[in-house]
Length: 408
Image (cartoon, rainbow, N blue to C red):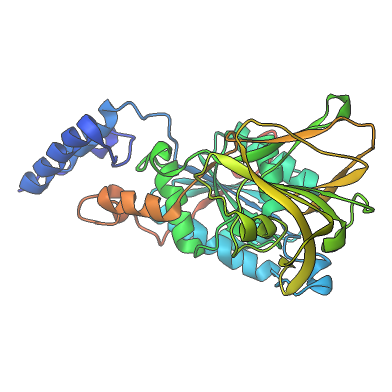
């Protein structure tokens, strides 16, 4: 008779390891194969000292992403509230199946997360955090602050480049699984939410180490006059004769400088211009600068879904990490598609690409490592054996942690 493992002794999930530690883990798995007792692997996990992981996945969904004027000015797809609820439900099911034990989500007027989570039959604790949302960018700021205060291991974000830029500005050390529901979607992934959530669960539970599948991303650090700063994740663009707050697609004739942290010809948005000239990957320790203006080489660029415009290119070059680029005024500075700042002719402003952004989970890599660790083999891994038909315990809290309802 194979003895039942004493799971109460261990609070850590099945690990994945490499090098000498990987050899020890392999021997532990050999013992499991020989005896059918998973205790040696759990003991290995305990010895690795990974008790800090807590299995918590946070959900931040921008309720207005995929719904702005660019659906009229171009042909961007509309991301409905029901679609976002469905995506969240799929992601959470994946996360819990892969090892997540706690889900934290933001309450907002559209009821996206609450509608997705309250009726799910999953064996996990759910906390709905009321940050006083008013459907503004400040909602995301307060939600990220609340997630950080709750020691969330991995954040699943639903939005575009702009949503993730806000998240990254508040919590640059976060580990993200960004899912695309916005207009400009270079930073977030188009991965199916079920497996994206599973990747988040694997990292949040410690089954897969973030160091093995979630490298730090690049960002563009902006220095403005008066010691003010800002960031962009994908592109910082200067525009002539424009204005802050303009949500319409950029006029190709007004583009002057395009600095990108990454670029590919298949992208949509201003970064795709650099992608047509000099592609730059996530992994490459560099960015690309494109200089534009009258008299240059005309190029047709997909500046928005279903919208090509002509941009006149004067020059382009690779920009190594940490090398500042002067932003010349007078101009309006667009960050990840949003016009945010005015730079006057006598202002001193610069931008540089750095690798100090949030960790971004490589979903495919995380699933490969999770599969190798036996997470989805139910005879070996407790996380794979978890019942998924129980009603969750749902807590409703204010941002400071005080209960809204009598749930605790």
